[in-house]
Amino acid sequence: MKRIVARLWKLIRGPLQWRVLWIAHAKFMVGVTGVVRNEAGEVLLLKHRMWPADRPWGLPTGYAVKGEEFPLTIVREVREETGLDVVPGRLVQVASGYKLRVEIAYEALHVGGDLKIDGFEILEAKWFRPDTLPDGMQESHIQLIKQAPLA
Image (cartoon, rainbow, N blue to C red; front, side, top):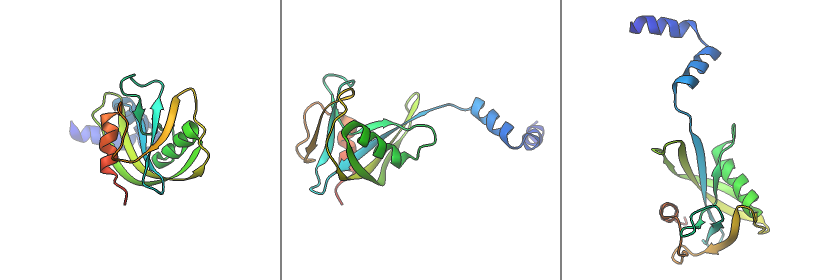
Protein backbone atom coordinates (compact mmCIF):
# COMPACT_ATOMS: atom_id res chain seq x y z
CA MET A 1 0.00 0.00 0.00
CA LYS A 2 2.83 2.43 0.87
CA ARG A 3 4.39 1.88 -2.57
CA ILE A 4 1.10 2.66 -4.29
CA VAL A 5 0.72 5.87 -2.29
CA ALA A 6 4.33 6.83 -3.10
CA ARG A 7 3.74 6.27 -6.82
CA LEU A 8 0.52 8.28 -6.76
CA TRP A 9 2.32 11.07 -4.91
CA LYS A 10 4.98 11.22 -7.62
CA LEU A 11 2.30 11.30 -10.34
CA ILE A 12 0.54 14.36 -8.90
CA ARG A 13 3.67 16.53 -8.66
CA GLY A 14 3.47 20.29 -8.36
CA PRO A 15 0.39 22.34 -7.47
CA LEU A 16 -1.81 19.33 -6.82
CA GLN A 17 0.62 18.05 -4.18
CA TRP A 18 0.48 21.43 -2.44
CA ARG A 19 -3.34 21.38 -2.55
CA VAL A 20 -3.41 17.92 -0.92
CA LEU A 21 -0.97 19.06 1.76
CA TRP A 22 -3.05 22.21 2.39
CA ILE A 23 -6.23 20.19 2.87
CA ALA A 24 -4.57 17.53 5.03
CA HIS A 25 -2.73 19.77 7.51
CA ALA A 26 -3.70 22.19 10.27
CA LYS A 27 -3.81 25.94 9.58
CA PHE A 28 -2.30 28.42 12.02
CA MET A 29 -2.13 32.15 12.50
CA VAL A 30 1.31 33.47 13.40
CA GLY A 31 1.49 35.96 16.27
CA VAL A 32 4.67 38.02 16.33
CA THR A 33 5.87 39.90 19.41
CA GLY A 34 8.71 42.40 19.70
CA VAL A 35 10.93 42.99 22.71
CA VAL A 36 11.63 46.58 21.65
CA ARG A 37 14.42 48.42 23.45
CA ASN A 38 15.81 51.91 23.16
CA GLU A 39 19.48 52.91 23.45
CA ALA A 40 19.11 53.21 27.24
CA GLY A 41 17.98 49.57 27.46
CA GLU A 42 14.40 50.43 28.35
CA VAL A 43 11.61 48.22 27.02
CA LEU A 44 8.62 49.59 25.11
CA LEU A 45 5.35 48.47 26.68
CA LEU A 46 1.85 49.16 25.46
CA LYS A 47 -1.39 49.31 27.40
CA HIS A 48 -3.74 47.36 25.14
CA ARG A 49 -7.43 48.28 25.00
CA MET A 50 -8.62 44.81 24.01
CA TRP A 51 -6.63 42.76 26.51
CA PRO A 52 -8.00 41.66 29.91
CA ALA A 53 -8.51 44.62 32.26
CA ASP A 54 -6.25 43.09 34.93
CA ARG A 55 -3.42 42.45 32.42
CA PRO A 56 -3.46 45.27 29.85
CA TRP A 57 0.31 45.91 29.65
CA GLY A 58 2.48 44.03 27.22
CA LEU A 59 4.94 44.12 24.39
CA PRO A 60 4.00 45.20 20.87
CA THR A 61 2.40 42.25 19.13
CA GLY A 62 0.29 41.37 16.14
CA TYR A 63 -0.42 38.77 13.50
CA ALA A 64 1.66 38.24 10.39
CA VAL A 65 -0.13 38.86 7.13
CA LYS A 66 0.10 36.43 4.23
CA GLY A 67 3.54 36.52 2.62
CA GLU A 68 5.08 38.78 5.28
CA GLU A 69 8.49 37.93 6.71
CA PHE A 70 8.08 37.57 10.47
CA PRO A 71 10.75 40.10 11.51
CA LEU A 72 8.96 42.65 9.32
CA THR A 73 5.68 41.95 11.12
CA ILE A 74 7.07 43.55 14.27
CA VAL A 75 8.37 46.54 12.27
CA ARG A 76 4.87 47.04 10.81
CA GLU A 77 3.02 46.48 14.08
CA VAL A 78 5.19 48.88 16.09
CA ARG A 79 4.82 51.56 13.41
CA GLU A 80 1.03 51.07 13.22
CA GLU A 81 0.52 51.06 16.98
CA THR A 82 3.05 53.69 18.06
CA GLY A 83 4.49 55.58 15.08
CA LEU A 84 7.97 54.43 16.11
CA ASP A 85 10.54 52.86 13.79
CA VAL A 86 12.39 49.71 14.84
CA VAL A 87 14.97 47.36 13.38
CA PRO A 88 14.34 43.68 14.12
CA GLY A 89 17.06 41.68 15.82
CA ARG A 90 17.56 38.10 16.86
CA LEU A 91 14.81 35.52 17.25
CA VAL A 92 13.97 35.14 20.95
CA GLN A 93 11.33 32.42 20.94
CA VAL A 94 9.09 30.20 18.83
CA ALA A 95 6.20 28.66 20.74
CA SER A 96 3.56 26.24 19.51
CA GLY A 97 0.93 24.17 21.26
CA TYR A 98 -1.80 26.77 20.97
CA LYS A 99 -5.05 25.72 19.30
CA LEU A 100 -4.86 27.94 16.20
CA ARG A 101 -1.65 29.94 16.42
CA VAL A 102 2.10 29.86 16.67
CA GLU A 103 3.87 32.61 18.63
CA ILE A 104 7.20 34.09 17.53
CA ALA A 105 9.19 36.78 19.35
CA TYR A 106 12.08 38.95 18.17
CA GLU A 107 14.30 41.52 19.74
CA ALA A 108 14.00 44.94 18.12
CA LEU A 109 15.83 48.24 18.48
CA HIS A 110 14.10 51.61 18.42
CA VAL A 111 15.76 53.73 15.74
CA GLY A 112 13.43 56.70 15.27
CA GLY A 113 9.96 58.05 14.70
CA ASP A 114 7.69 60.12 16.92
CA LEU A 115 5.44 58.45 19.47
CA LYS A 116 1.87 58.66 18.22
CA ILE A 117 -0.30 55.85 19.58
CA ASP A 118 -3.13 54.21 17.71
CA GLY A 119 -6.03 55.14 20.00
CA PHE A 120 -8.16 52.24 18.78
CA GLU A 121 -5.97 49.38 20.00
CA ILE A 122 -3.52 51.12 22.31
CA LEU A 123 -4.35 53.26 25.35
CA GLU A 124 -0.82 54.17 26.36
CA ALA A 125 2.82 53.53 25.38
CA LYS A 126 5.77 53.95 27.75
CA TRP A 127 9.40 52.97 28.11
CA PHE A 128 10.23 50.93 31.24
CA ARG A 129 13.44 49.70 32.77
CA PRO A 130 13.34 45.87 32.87
CA ASP A 131 13.56 45.96 36.68
CA THR A 132 10.56 48.33 37.03
CA LEU A 133 7.85 46.75 34.88
CA PRO A 134 4.27 47.85 35.57
CA ASP A 135 1.63 45.81 37.38
CA GLY A 136 -0.86 44.17 35.07
CA MET A 137 1.68 42.73 32.64
CA GLN A 138 1.29 39.58 30.63
CA GLU A 139 3.43 36.93 32.38
CA SER A 140 4.58 35.52 29.05
CA HIS A 141 5.87 38.97 28.10
CA ILE A 142 7.80 39.30 31.36
CA GLN A 143 9.51 36.03 30.47
CA LEU A 144 10.32 37.28 26.95
CA ILE A 145 11.97 40.39 28.41
CA LYS A 146 14.08 38.15 30.66
CA GLN A 147 14.99 35.94 27.68
CA ALA A 148 16.11 38.94 25.63
CA PRO A 149 18.49 40.80 27.93
CA LEU A 150 20.25 43.86 26.60
CA ALA A 151 23.43 42.70 24.90
